[in-house]
Length: 480
Image (cartoon, rainbow, N blue to C red):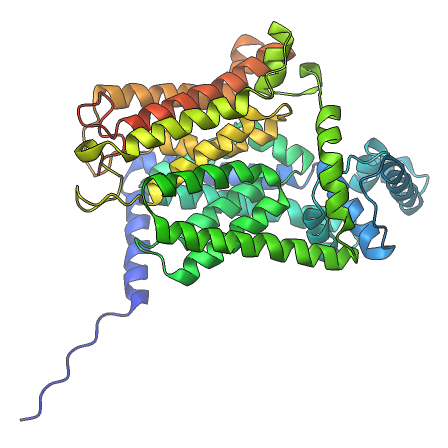
């Protein structure tokens, strides 16, 4: 008799459908989860409406330089004379487009932004300006709306993606989306000015998704590295994330992953440099940007009263000395010391997601920790940190607030205390609850609250990393 053919496995789409049904059942079967979902929907709807009504003075600068590059081919965007010239030219165009009608002026977001930005602050990289030049249509209000809605979608997906990596339930994920959208001050600030911090988080989340397998293939490492390298060229503050990530992989002996991803990062940086140099018809803008960077950083010594939330500026205001050269090695050194202790802790080390005690390879959860530490170090080391920059603390906050490693796991007392302190740190960075409760108006008080929250998150993350040691009071912080 002929052998029966083996039955085919159920198609992946059936598994996906079953998984989607399970997610839906988890909402419908739990009242708190359903409430969280409704809060998330409400928060997204509110954020969508809010995003479309802002003038976006930062986005206007990116868009204006991109349009000038596209239309007239101006090359030297980093000189003081060109900043004034571009600002004046774009202001005149906005005035001519709107005309003398007062209502039209009030309704035109381009007119309002150009009125505020008559002299541009061109501190961004040539790669960023090239991207905006390639993607803008010339209709400011339309381009701005598309940018804002795209950033919102990317940000929500970034929160959902990181929550999924960290083992959040659907209800907890919905609550995280609602919380980090509706009352989180950095998110509101980034939406107000139209900056790119939401996009940076999306880049980091996509990077993690591309590395999602236990042993990512070579092409996954290369592609994710290209993405992250391009992100660093887009906004160089991600360089701290790259540094901490590579240090962590080095300590935990992820040599293959480190080499392949680093190669991808190099390719991403080179590709971004080449494309932007070709668009500018010269590599000179990159040289101008690098040459101007030290002077630009000195000019960016913005006081607390103008909205600077940087720890360095706060310390300078209180103690009268500038800690700019001290803070970066202090925070990076702290991370290195803790990673080395965790990496060489012998049998006491337990890495999240490891199937066996002997398996020392870090999982994506540890990658979230490293990314969060890198983003927070970049903030605590800077001498200029607008409120929207503190969006980079979100991965660290999600990491520290993550649920137990398995359903029904009873957390230790130390772990519960760490969670509550992490929640306090998030509230400090969010700023809005404290402003409402304490009627907080002083610039120094707000800066101390936000930078203090970032320091608390950073400290808690290092303590949580040290919980790799057996017998730690914070177990099972990193344990499987």
